[in-house]
Length: 463
Picture 1 (cartoon, rainbow, N blue to C red):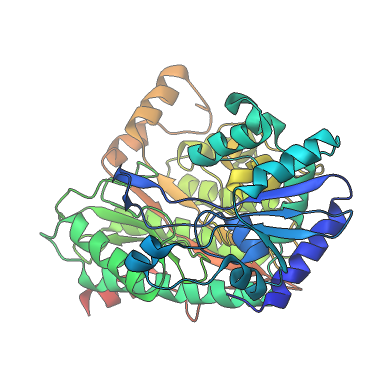
Picture 2: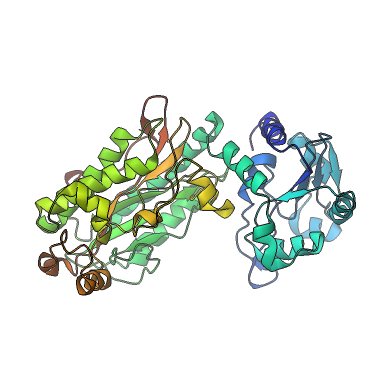
């Protein structure tokens, strides 16, 4: 937990952005796996963590911008809880840790909100994503569950995004720690990978490192020799000669800040010539993006410049054809990279995605595209110092997509479909780093960069 003054300052800044009504922030409750008392590892709501820092279930808070009142709601433990959990701080003691003097039992929350509704006060709340909180909001406010997303406060959403999207120095220090854990996860997998292993063995080691050094993984680990499936969570295959392993994984540290890295390594420890050619193109796109990411450029522009590097490389190999600028404008490169260059990262690996990506990655100036591929860009808005982002270009050979485009004649003036026949079993390559935008450019987060050139990857794997 940060010093209480940090949370007090964040709440003060939030009140300056909301000048009417009251703000309701709900924490999370425990979530059961297969029976009520057997639960998943608890994960607090990120916005509640940001403003109150208390990583415990069954808490809620009210902030009244007009009166300045701040109230923390939660229950003290009883003897049965103490027997199973040991002594616990009181709700008053929890409030004192984060600079909240007024605390109440959780049951008083409904009374407070009913009184506010009778007085005609607007109640600002964020869109719920867990069913427990959807039912709770329905009970507290009398709103139909199906309407809660639309009833959520756009004013509050935008205020929270404005505060959370630019990272404070204390947050950057925590993300740095999460990146170092992510480095250890990936570097260990690179060292251990051997022909004949099952993918699950590598995934298990990586996740063990995340749990031993931090809170957990920041998302379910992607580790597969079928890298053409972008989010492949299956780990059942045996590492086989001639195949590539896409490993997309990250850590969440004990302060719940996240990292997210991807490396693609050869199962045998040695790239084929064909694999090395595609790998170098993706690495060049990654390096290009980092070389131009800076304040006042939009991330949509950075994305498109990386796509031009990809298209130019594929044109040189004979897989694409025609003018590179025209090909990217037409979206032809999206046959090979049907996703965006990256996303915001912080307390969530896809930071604040629960608030609506259109409010996080876009704004009134930069709007999302409807073009295939570009429409999947999660972050497009203009960059400012303190933005933390992923840079993750990729190149994939997806047989079903190739067949569809060829049958429909999609971008046929830019795609050499005959040449793609030799790549149908290639799989995919993705290379991802985490960066923060600085005053005049960007820098990578973490103590050092994971091996990025084919030569360095082979050296570490075979060493």
